[in-house]
Amino acid sequence: MKTLEQKNAETVTAFIEDANNRRLLEETGQFFALQMAAAFTDRRYAVDEILAQGDKVIARIMITAVHSGQFVQYAPTGKIVKVTQFREFRVSEGNITEQWGWLDTSTLLPQLQA
Image 1: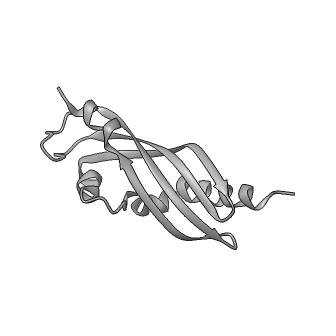
Image 2: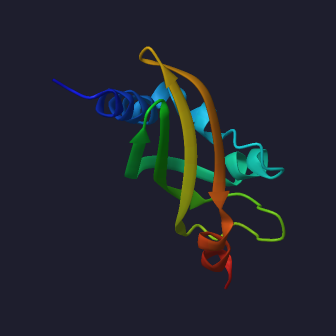
């Protein structure tokens, strides 16, 4: 029998892996989130690590994308980049009821420099 934490981790993993949810994963609340979505195409999301405790699930996600548009002062490079995204989810009765996200730009910006 699976624990509550295992079930919640599976719910979140399925959410992240479902292509229909990609737009929701781009919404981080950070001021540059819309620029990120426009500047980086062919995005792929992979769960690197997932931790669950009670109704809270934290996921570290690796996003791989192509830098194909202007991002802040960085002109498109055509490079494949990797950026870490962290997301916190609250799961109730098998449903995600809340989520927050943020991107680790310190893993991204060095990859955009010439």
